[in-house]
Length: 238
Image 1: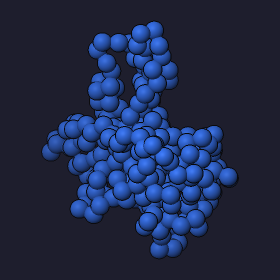
Image 2 (image 1 turned 60 degrees about the horizontal axis):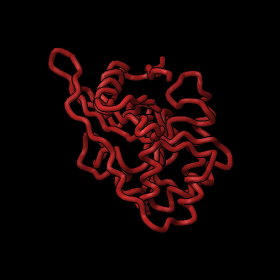
Image 3 (image 1 turned 45 degrees about the vertical axis):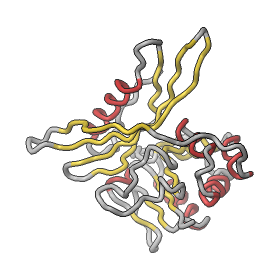
Image 4 (image 1 turned 90 degrees about the horizontal axis):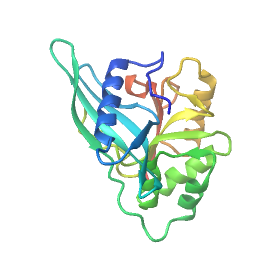
C-alpha cells in the first residue's frame, strides 16, 4: 500500500507528516494485523503557531479469517513552540453517529455513485442521516461533470472555523470538502487551475454561499487562504 507523502504544493509539509504519523500510531491495532491507507491529509486550519490536520483513512484488518473494511477521519491538533518545533497535542477521531433506518433518495444516490469517492467517515455521516440534502444534491449535480474525491463532510472536522469561535458548517452537515477532482489533487501544482476554478464556480452556481479554495475568485461567495490551498470547501445555509 502506497505510503502518504506530502507533495510539492504543500504548505508546512512537516506539519502534515507529524499528523499522519500520529494517526498511523493511533489506528494501528495491537491484537490483529492491519493495513492503514491514508487517503489524504488536509488542513482543518493552519495558523502561525497552531494547526488542525484532517486525515481520512481506510483500515483493513483480518478477524476470524475475514477481511474487515473500516476507517475513520482524525482531526490532529498541533502547536508550534517558541523554538519553532511543531508537536502533536491531540487527536480526535470522527464520531459519525449511528445509521438511520431510512435515508433520503439523495443520500442513497450519493452512496451508490461511482463518481463520488467517499472516505469511510463521510459515508458514515451520510448513513447517519445528518447531512443536509443541499450538500447531497450539489454533490450529485457536480458528479455529472466531475469525478469527486471527498475528504470531509461532517465528522472529523473542527466544530468551529479554526482559530475563531464561529461555528463551522461541517459539523452541522452543511458543507463538504473536495481534495481531488477528476483524479487530480487540488493541492498539486500540476493540477489545472481552470479545472479547480470551474469546479468552484459550479459549486457556487448550485447554491453554495461559501466556496473556498486555492484561488481567489471574484464574487462575495468565494474566499481563499492558506487552509484552503489543499481543498475546495463548499458550505450551505440550509
